[in-house]
Amino acid sequence: MNLNKDFFYLSVIALVFSGIIQPVWAEGKSMTLKVATRMPKGNIYYRTLQDVGSAWRDAQGNDSKYIIYPDGTQGSEQDTVRRMRIGQLDVAMLSVVGLKEIDESVSALQLMPLVFRSWDEFDYVHKHLRPELERKLLEKGFVVLYWGEGGWVQFFSTEPRLTPDDFKTARIFTWAGTPSQVDLMKSLGYQPVVLGLSDILASLQTGMIDTVPASPLWALAFQFYGTTNHMLRMNYAPIVGATIITKRTWDKMTPEAREAMRIASHEAEKKLRSNRDVQDEVSIMAMQENGLVVHEISPEVEQEWMTMIQRVWPLVRGNIVPAEMFDRVQNLLAEYRIQH
Figure 1 (cartoon, rainbow, N blue to C red):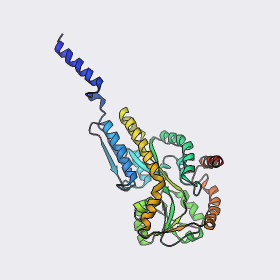
Figure 2: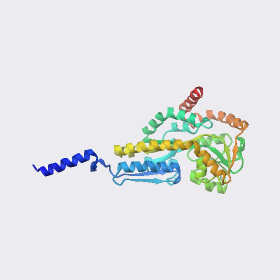
Figure 3: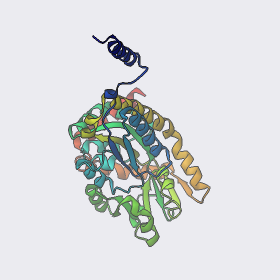
């Protein structure tokens, strides 16, 4: 028996368990995560992706890489979901437009116009639906890392438009990949123009569109408010999304890396939530300083919109939003409003 060698091995084991040195087998395999987002570099949504990636990379170790592709360079949200399914992308920050490509139930969070009156109402509904929505997405092969909201949809147009009838002469940007919504708008006498987000600026310049429904943050981030310099302030619907990762990639990570990503994602969601209440106001003020004209909605005009939208809801139910989810949202809102 070689006492010196045995003493050396016992010493190394003791140091490993004390945490002074790390065993090489605790480090995971080298991985590269490819991440897609429509957000530009530098804004708070992009920064949360960076924070999550940094935490994951440190935990996964072994020179793992986390590559973010911003500005929609990986195509539309529908393209992004397809790329994730075939393994070309691992993580994506998507709005409901992309998430509903995975499971249509998610559409209930965003595609029900003038249903939510406040973030408190939205939070109450989301809290109750969240476990089911995450389960449905997981069954389709995607793990939700964190949710986030992008503000309230307002209407940006090249000239003042206030009433529902005013918008019937408008050429309105409409998300590619939403055929049911396009058909509904046409049936109501509106003129939807189907485009990708990256096509908005060029289409405004050529006159193909003259109206863009978007949150103030998006209008500021993508700089189209310079042309559509009139905003009808109405809080039409919340912009909702989530950052997701394929279950295939999730399962390849070390347990330590998954836990680090969970913790960082929880912090990212808190950061976005704390910023949510002020980002619309900050964005609107910044745009007003550069010529944006904000038109506040009067009670009379608001009633015109509500009258029109209430006629639309039965057409949304079962066509754009699954009937069961539409009813659950309405029931939860009624429950919340009784309590408050």
